[in-house]
Length: 208
Image 1 (tube, helix red, strand yellow):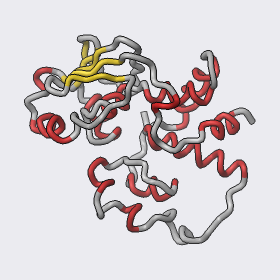
Image 2 (tube, one colour):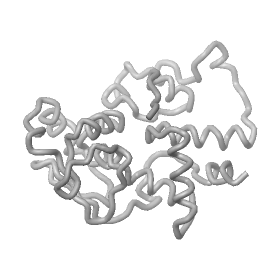
Image 3 (tube, one colour):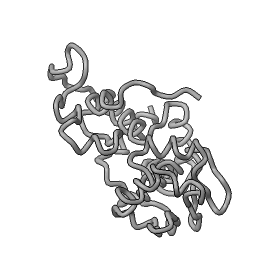
Image 4 (tube, one colour):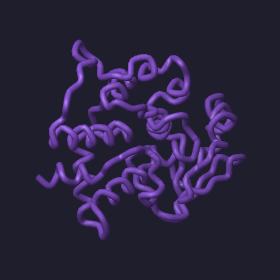
């Protein structure tokens, strides 16, 4: 499956906000968006008024980049969201939040969603006692996510436990920091999404 391999900081600048794709770097003076808070390219500093379609497109691109999802998969999530009960835009965000790589990040078991994706792909996590190496795996209520026992002694996970695992997690997750174990106790709701997202614009875009 293809993936974006360019510089992450360029994506933040393009969307005009920090997407927190680089973990610790996003909180330091090295952050590229803090230095150059305008779109990349020769004409990046020129003010441009977006059309209605332009605003819808930018919102979709922003959400795709936050969660590290490419177009085909993102469209598939939207189609799933439309078939679910409730509001399509909120269903879409809930599905994205339930991705295993996002859950690992939200539990504090990785510094960023990008790192979480790599750690999951390298089979460092188990769900309900079974190894899962698919970042897009959708967790459900009652699922238990844990770092594999043999991985806990690795230097990176020792650092993660000390630096990130103690940070607050959303209310739909609970965790045991000492043992690097988390549990899904509810499905994520719109109130659990802390990024400034206007999901109705995405619904409008795909409804054309």
